[in-house]
Length: 178
Image 1 (cartoon, rainbow, N blue to C red):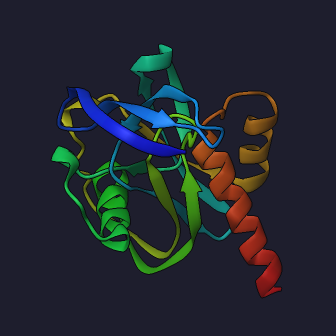
Image 2: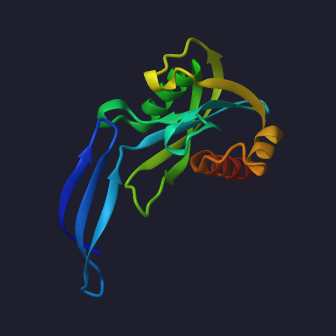
């Protein structure tokens, strides 16, 4: 598919929505709507058998959801993913990690968004004060045993695709290391 032209339809400090005129492989023309967002970082904070989760209200779906700490830099700023991961962990939970290991890359919704994410494993944790953004003021945090985390996925308490995919990356990492 070849982009013939592009126009910005909407923009704010977190994303740009654009409409592209495209030519498909068969030569036919069409349009493609794309949401451009910067790379995000997701952090699995692991302490023994416990995972650190955050719970917050997600406006687009109108529900509170449990997930791993994750986010992007404000104003679509391009921040090195490892630095962004440490910042997100600190801002949302107050945790600092002595060790951060990149687990892999995740595509959020490649059929409509250019956003990609990097998943990290944080260990050697120490507690400090969080520094949440305005939208995160109602955020709660909890340490959850892994068996409970998996049960939360099974019963639909955790539905965040990025958190579930990142946990899979963690399981694969652990299997390779064994």
